[in-house]
Image (tube, rainbow, N blue to C red; front, side):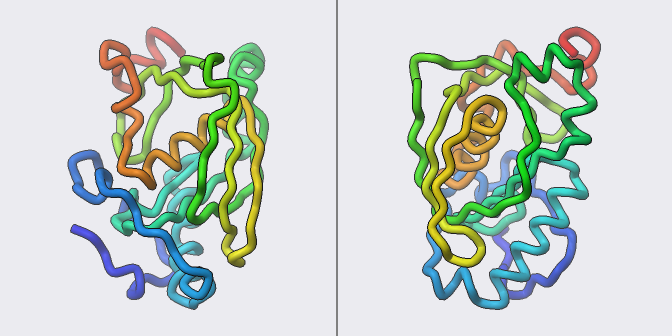
Length: 193
């Protein structure tokens, strides 16, 4: 069931889980006027609260039942500090400040060089799987002020962008993973973490 984003306020939103049709729908683009309206600004604020409460590093509007081309991203230093130094280096992971991407266009760079890492999803709670992703990407999008932003990202940040933009196009990380590598978070920590 899709929610009416106009009724949302600055609240924590419910994250929908795999099987909800909104996760398999290509989300609708927004006009600049729609981005700047109060309802969209309140919705973005609620997405921030939801992302941080989860906690997660990215959240796309379809994950909270709204089929719009909006995603929020933030990879906090305290999340990274939970990893071993060798894992941080291997994943090329560094803090990413909070930002919003709207109507993003993704270009994969160095497609032949992919990294295979375990990836989780707030809409597939309790599971992770090994997903191949491009090491570098270029994204053109609008921000929450309807301004054009260009992002060149590599490493884990590139992975986050690919994951969230996939959500906006009705694709889940399980569509890209080797299903033999799907595992519970508990078993990931026990055997791979």
